Amino acid sequence: MRVGLVIVSHSGPLSDGVVELVGQMAPEVRVNAAGGTPSGGVGTDFEATSAALAAAETGSGVVLLYDLGSARMTAELAVESLAEPNTAVVVDAPLAEGAVAAAVAAQNGDDLEAVARAAEQAAGAGGAEESEEAAATSAAEGASVATRAESELTLENEVGLHARPAALLARSLTGLDAAVTVSFGESTTDARSVLGVMGLGARKGDRIGLRATGPDAETALRRITELVERDFDE
Amino acid sequence: MRSAANSVSEHRDELVELDRAIGDGDHGENMERGFLAVRNQLELTVPESPAAALKSVATSLISSVGGAAGPLFGTAFLRASTAVGDAETLDGPTVAAALRAALDGVTARGKAEREDKTMVDALAPAAEAAEAASTTAGSGPSAVLRAAAEAAETGARTTVSLIAKKGRASYLGDRSAGHLDPGARSVVLLLNAFADVTGAE
Image (cartoon, rainbow over all chains, first blue to last red; front, side, top):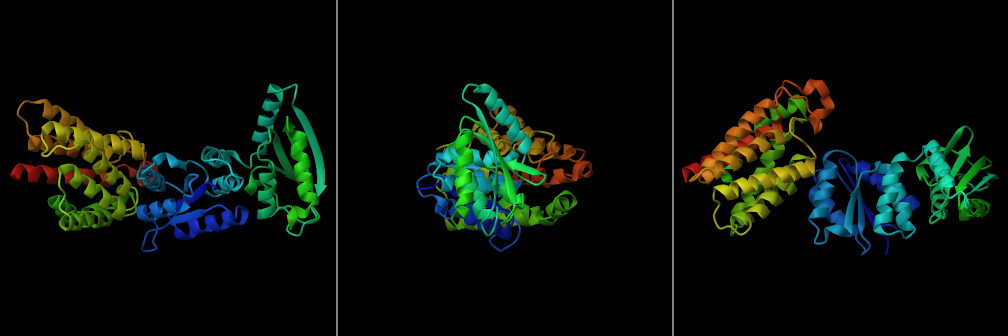
């Protein structure tokens, strides 16, 4: 079974919105909202958080994300109140970006630790410079096996790099040792950052650039190319 | 505990005013609601031990106070409950140990340190004063709680001049100075009520 997610927020509409967003990209992941007070006001609710946590557990563990301040405490308290507190983790991550990254990892079958890490690493997502720097470092470290690959592709699918295609693109890179960037126009982003890729705003007919560095650079580009050529299975 | 609930109710408006100055003005209402729940629960099920009573308080507060105060005060009572263990009555050293555990719980949960202008500024000196008092021969729970309450009061007063570094008031930055921290004030109210009750027994 897949790792579940809980979105703890001060606002019901905010947590529902994150759940909606994530549901588009990771349809098989259980993502539950715990937002607002029982009376529908602004605040966090321990009971609702505990219930959302219990409902998100399928046997593989749960990652909890929070919006701000006391939502973290409520989430931590809910985890500590579990019979087995080590089956859930509260992560410090940007709420929307972190939830998307975690859900994509969970959809892919990653374990609890990997899903939590995906959320945490989303903090720097969208920063292409960072990933290029990381790529350069990893390239230097594994000089003998490291490769670089570049290509350009034209999007033929109806919706371009919208939510679902962006998620599929990020997912296609799972398990690969390569830093990959996607660029469109003046912008470049980490290919694993779903929101970053969506943020490029590339549509049908647009030409995107791909760049990969690392031992699996070639494989990474081949997978993305296949995905684009299949029109993201639309 | 009933007396603590009454004290929170009596000072509800004061807490609301303090919180309105540097927070969102709901601390008084939230704490009153929380302690009403505490009182109802304790009347519904009479706890069998001090630890069970403290745990019941914690659960009620966590479920009904909301915001940051719910988890924080809830954690304080929960940790105190664990520290008390299976003691049938609370002597001075046990009270001191419970306050220390409550403080450790609150700092672990809220990540606040002293002089961040939070309830820690009242609870930390209270725990220390309680420990000091409990080592004095013959001082019972009432003397320990009284010492804790007085230290908490002095500590809470120091929050007036502080600039908040944690919690909602920290969003105000320098403008948070000049106001008493509502969370610290609540700690004082609770400890005073506990000291009064044990002193009267």
